Image (cartoon, rainbow, N blue to C red; front, side, top):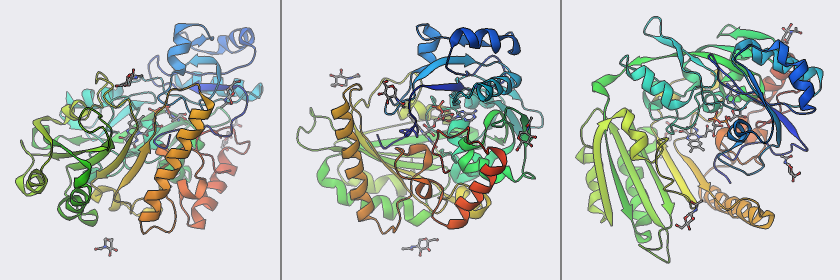
Length: 448
Ligand SMILES: Cc1cc2nc3c(=O)[nH]c(=O)nc-3n(C[C@H](O)[C@H](O)[C@H](O)COP(=O)(O)OP(=O)(O)OC[C@H]3O[C@@H](n4cnc5c(N)ncnc54)[C@H](O)[C@@H]3O)c2cc1C
Ligand SMILES: *[C@@H]1O[C@H](CO)[C@@H](O)[C@H](O)[C@H]1NC(C)=O
Ligand SMILES: *[C@@H]1O[C@H](CO)[C@@H](O)[C@H](O)[C@H]1NC(C)=O
Ligand SMILES: *[C@@H]1O[C@H](CO)[C@@H](O)[C@H](O)[C@H]1NC(C)=O
Ligand SMILES: *[C@@H]1O[C@H](CO)[C@@H](O)[C@H](O)[C@H]1NC(C)=O
């Protein structure tokens, strides 16, 4: 799995985890070892809303189910946390028992406050959909990932791409302050005056568990109108298509804001038994149909299918099959080329955050799916993904392989995730020495 595939590589044996929490009875904390012990020792220190779940319970299964089974950690106990203090207590307990832990998003934690119309405070476990929906009722929006299913902080701690990034920058660029439980269990509020601020925005998974985030929010422009067209092409159009995408849309990083274009190779034997097909999406904000200067070149190219609609920003997840209730339309492998607009991302100085890939105009990701449980198949799938990635890399003009940390498969290494400029990793390691000297937070794309 190249896409997403998580960085739990190198973790041996059982793991305990914190599924993180948020504001109101949300997230989870998972830890291992003697379960009876954890209930009697940790239990009294937790709030009344917290729960400890052991294997065999529905809640345990629910909390440990992952999008990718590849190199999934082995959880033995889940602590569902309800308050910031629960997170600190659980981390302290895990440290005392020398139990490894990780935060996993609980998928809860809605917006806590929206005081001045310019910022909102969001629980550490909140999902994209909850955030977008509740801001929408106030005529506001912020940058989230495209899938309703991911959290804000999971993506955001590694940068965080989203459709509104062309206007506003990455998810991490929206942070105004973060409440963080450090590796030693103490809770601090971190803002731009802290040295840790730089590291949290791009390498944040390595520094703490975020219990809440205050982020910038914006008025929804143009009544939030968006439109889209989806084309499907046969494989013989591949060169014309990508030429046109480069010439008419991406234009070396000048695709207009309020735009998102992406394509994917996929297989549909009923349409073409021998070759991949290409689905290509153009999404445009502020207009009830994609403007003809952008749409026409792609219509002329002879798609085998074409479909479009207009609605609001909130409909995008449904149009792109990224809604929580979307059917699993892509259960096969696919190859993704994401063309987010980049002005908002590139207007922020590259050295001002740990996110190292601001100059990139495209995200390219082979996504290889397979039935879990078969080690040989898993290794073949992994090799296949590596081969696909290598082909793309060889075909690019890049000297180094850059990997977006949230899409990484785990074997790329710290330079690829955090940047090849030596000062970047040096700076991260200085922060790590200060804030997590015992390397307790070490399972998500570690650099130590
Ligand atoms: C279908 C799909 C669509 C995606 N779309 C996008 C996209 O549009 N843009 C984008 O940038 N990425 C996207 N991604 C990648 C995404 O950024 C990562 O998968 C991310 O890790 C998801 O975070 P999560 O919190 O939802 O998941 P989780 O598995 O719960 O968390 C992932 C990691 O983040 C850490 N984490 C989560 N919450 C916290 C917290 N509060 N404090 C500290 N650590 C925390 C966890 O410890 C864990 O290690 C997508 C992935 C998938 C599967
Ligand atoms: C989880 O346990 C299985 C079976 O014991 C083992 O093969 C696997 O490597 C473990 N995974 C991790 C990430 O430790
Ligand atoms: C693309 O943009 C970059 C950064 O603005 C610039 O350095 C480069 O020369 C441009 N390339 C082309 C082919 O225009
Ligand atoms: C994926 O699709 C194939 C063929 O369309 C089907 O046989 C299979 O059951 C699907 N798998 C899942 C997990 O949905
Ligand atoms: C926890 O770590 C932070 C950062 O290193 C430090 O400032 C704080 O004093 C530590 N707290 C405890 C209780 O040791």
